Every structure is written in structure tokens, then in C-alpha cells.
Image (cartoon, rainbow, N blue to C red; front, side, top):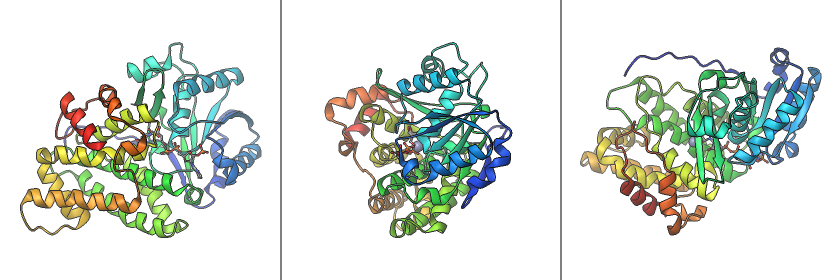
Length: 387
Ligand code: NZQ
Ligand code: ZN
């Protein structure tokens, strides 16, 4: 293990069929006025909204509506949510949706009592909140981001073409999260596979880094194998509870701060994907899948032992040939699985064009925890190969 760490994840989880009903005791801990945050309307069609409203009413809460959170929530919507929260003096925020809704709720929570421009403070200067934070709870309806059990919050600024995530301290994590796998049955197939790839890539970002033998790498391999196995079942049979619940639980563990302890982490695929997202507003998981293979092929020589281990341990590649051949076979297997899922394998299909490449490269943050710190020409090369 590298370095010392303090591990503290305070999110209380309610997992399983009908788990929303177990929330009454928890809700009693918070004040009377709830800001009910949700997306574009899926929760009204699938009955989740009614179930949540019913439990809030049972607990005597006053509901302040804040719907219409878009995928890849924006600074403009954040300003709207802050205004609603201030006008109604809300006591807590209940996010009912996927990563976008959860991330947005966290951004509102640290902005309600903040005197400065939240975008500048949190997403440009990466400062921690110095004001009171409104507590957030989360009812997850779409699996992938891990937002339900982490302090990440990604906001898009269309005025400046930037999509930036801030990983706050644990005080910004949701206080509780409801994870009912049945809530994910109505997620459209395209979103389901994007979410599965997102979770898988969160693991990759923490796996393809470091050259020690870290317990995290063993955990990563188990989670990756589980996601691949269960994704195949879910593709055939989307209402398979075992598969959907395994995917939900694995995705939460993929990004709830556990894997990142005691080792370096990469996150460059996310930086490339977020920059593509800032220009195209494409689905997050698809932006990741579209840049992954050109990026991993590029860094493979710098992290050869881990790429070989990935091939053998995750994909069962036979140890025949050179290390390089075995490692490359692992990426081929990853490519095959991406095709099975039907996720994007290039950024052109997401709306990116050659003319955008320089701008996307400008918007790509360079991380230094992976096998290679990318130079500007390398970023441009990877983006061109992703077109
Ligand atoms: O808006 P509605 O109508 O609810 O529809 C949503 C949305 O269109 C739909 N959906 C969600 N649950 C559904 C459902 N449709 C039917 N039935 C359900 N049960 O799915 C669509 C996508 O939802 P969204 O929340 O945008 O997806 P996701 O969970 O992938 O979140 C993406 C956002 O999270 C950020 C991404 O950058 C992106 O902005 N991320 C957050 C992270 C974090 N907090 O740590 C890490 C991730 O790497 C990621 O960057
Ligand atoms: Zn992600």
C-alpha cells in the first residue's frame, strides 16, 4: 500500500426491493421542508415519484418541487435550484434519479449558503465549502456513477465549454441512499449499457496505475469480472433481479472511495470523456467508451505488467506469446465486450468533429497518477484516433 490514509464513508445505504419503505425513521432526522429533485420525468412514468412522495407525506414533510434536471446538469440549472432552495428555506434535499440528479443535488447543497459564485469557487478553484451544507439524500434510479455513495459532483458550463467534476470531502456525500434494483428495470437499454461501462471504467481508472501489488487491484478484478458476467445476463434479460442487483452493488463499490485508498489513480479517460461531453453533451458512459481504446493502447507500453495482468485475470487470456501480445489481447477482449454492450466506440457518433479537436484538447485536464502524463500532442493524437 502506498502512503497513509483515513477511510471514512458515512453514507447509510438502504438496499433491495421496496427499500424506500424503510426510510421513515431516517427521514425523521431531517427538518420539515424537502426539496424534491428529479430529472426529465422518467420517475413520474415508472411510479418511483409516487412512492417517494408517499413516504415523504407519511413523514409529514412539505415538498418543494425541483424537477427538470437534465443529463449532464448545467450551471444555469444549478442557479435555479439554489434560488428554489433559498426561497423556500429547505431543510434537506432528496435527489430521485441517476448521477445527474444526485450530482446536482450535491452542488445545490454546497451553494445555498455560499456567498460566492459556486462555479468559480468549487469547479474552477476546487475549494471546499466554508458555509453550511444542506443535507442530501438520494433515491437511485439509474446505475453507474457511484454518486449515491461518493462526494463527486460534475457540472457542465455551456458558456465556457467546460464539464468539471469536484470530488468534495465526505461531508458532501449523501447522508443516505436508497438502492432498489427494481427501480432500474425501466432504464432504457442505451442508458443501462452506458452506466455499466461507466462503472467498469471507474474501476479501470483506479486499476491502471501503480506498480505495487495492492489489495485494491484484486478487488478491482473481482468487480470487473462481476460486471462483465452480470451485464451479459442483463442484456438478455433486463428484469433479472440477480443481475441488476449485482450490477447496482458493484457500481456503488466501483466509486465509493474504497478502491482509491493507498494507491495512485489515473482518471485520464474521464478527463478526455468529460471534455468530449462539454462539446457534445453526449451520455457520460458513451464518452468514456469512445475514447478508452485509443487511450489504453497509447499508455499500454508504460504499464505493460498491469495490462498483461488485466488480460489474464479479467479476460482469461492464455499466457502464450510476448507480454505485449498478451496485454494487447486483453484490450481486444475489452473491445469485444464493448461491442456486445453496444456502447460508442468513437466520438464521431457522439457528434464530435475534426474542427472540435483542438477545443476538446484545451478542455481536457491532465492527470498525473496514471502510467503516463499526457502531453498536448498526445491528447490530440488520442482524440483524433477516437474520431
Ligand atoms: O431525466 P429522466 O427523465 O429521469 O431520465 C434519465 C436520463 O435521461 C434516465 N433515467 C434515469 N433513471 C431512469 C431513467 N429512465 C427510465 N427509468 C429510470 N429508472 O436516464 C438518463 C440518464 O440519467 P443520468 O442521471 O444523466 O445518468 P448517469 O447516472 O449516468 O449520470 C451522469 C452524470 O453523472 C456524472 C456524469 O458526468 C454525468 O454528468 N458523473 C458523476 C460522478 C460522480 N458523482 O462521482 C462520476 C461519474 O464519472 C460521472 O462523471
Ligand atoms: Zn464516470
